[in-house]
Image (cartoon, rainbow over all chains, first blue to last red; front, side, top):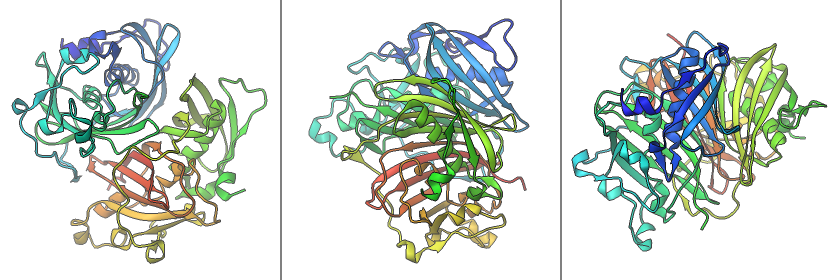
Length: 269
Length: 269
C-alpha cells in the first residue's frame, strides 16, 4: 500500500446508514505544514469517504470550506448522500474532531473521460525537467509533507529569500513538479493533494508564513498518466489580507488533469 | 425594491432555530433559461439566506453543487450554521422543493476589503463600450433572464450562428457587459448572478443548447462600484461532455470584483 493510500485510508463504521455513513480516519500528521494537516491532503481523505458512500470512481468537483485546522490523530467523517444519479452522484462530507466540525466538503462524483478532448486550451508551460529544478525546502515553518511528496520548483519561480525590492517586480506565479517519494504514481484522488503542494504564491509579494486556506474547489478532468505531475500556481488579487490562488496540473503526457482555485488569508503583519 | 432584490428575497420562518434556520422563498421563473431558474440566480437566493443566518455582509466564497433543477414557485432553504468566527462564518444552505434537494451550497461569509489591493493582476481586457456591443439574444432555447438583465456581448466574441468550419478556429471566450434593466446597481450579492449571465462558451465549439451547471464556485473580491459590470468567460477543456467555464467580473472602475469557475455538461449529440 502506498504512503498516500495509507495516510488517506478511511474505515466505514459498522451499522452506518447507507445514506448517512460515518467513517473513522486516523489523520497522519506527516502530511502537514507547520503541524497542521495540509488542506489538499484533507480534501483527499474526505473525497475518499464521499466516493465510498456513493459508489463512484472519481471526485469530479470537490469544494471544501475550512472551518478549523484539525490535528493529526483520530477523527470522524460524517457523510450525507444528497443525490444518486445516472451521470453523477453528490455527497456532503464533514470532518469532525473533538466534537468540532473542521472541514465541510461537497463532492460531485462520476467517471472521468477517457476519450481525447474535443478542446484543450492552456497547455503546460515550457519548464526545465525535474532534475534541473529546486526541491521545495522548509521555510520559516516546517513542511512535514515534504517527507512524502517530492516537490521541485522551477528555479526562476522560487519565491524564497528574495530581497524586498526584487519581490515587487515578480509575478506571484510558481511552477514545478511533484511525485511521491515512495515511487507510487498519483491517481485521480491524489490530484486533490497535487493542487495544494506548492508554497503560497504570495511569498513572491513578501507575505511569508502560514497562509490558511479558507475555501478550495478542485475540478478533476482526467486520470493522470504515470510519472511526474507538473503544476502551475498563481495569485491574481491580494487585498485586505485575502488572496486567490489558482492551480493547474498536467500529467506526464501533458494532459491537463486538474484545476483548482482557493481563497486564502495571509499572515497579518 | 429592485427586481433583483425582490426575486431573491427570502423569509425566515418563525420559530426557526438560530443554528438551523429555515427560509421560505418564491423562486421567480422570470430569472430562468429555458424555464429553469438560472444557476447564478439560485446561488444569490441561497447566499442571501446564508448571510442572514450568520449575520455577515458578504458571501466571500460560495460553492454550489446542483442536484436537480427546481422550477419557479415556492421552495424552502434549510441552513446549517457551521462556524461563527471572528474573521469569517460558514453556513451550508440546501434548496428543497417538493421534498427533493435541488441545490447544496456552502458559503463562507465575512467583509469584503475596501482598501486598495496590494496586488491586482488580470486587468480587464480592452472592450468596446456597451453601446457598441450586441444584446444577448434568445437562442434555440428561451432566455427569460434577459427580461431582467441587460447582457451585451463584444461582437467578435459572439458565438451564435457561426458556420461549423468557422467555429473550429475560435477560442471559447466570450466577453461582455451586464446591468439590470430596472436601473438598480449590482451589489456584491448580484455578482453571484453576474458570473453566470453569459451564454455557454462551448457554443463556440458547436455545442449549442442547454448546458447544465453541475458545480459553480464564486469568489467575491470587492463591492462593485455603480455602473456596468464587465465580464469575460472562457472554457479550457471540453472532454467527455464535461467542460469548465471560468468567469471574471470587473466593475466600472476596472476593479476585479468576482471570479468563478463552473463544471458543466454539454448536450449529448
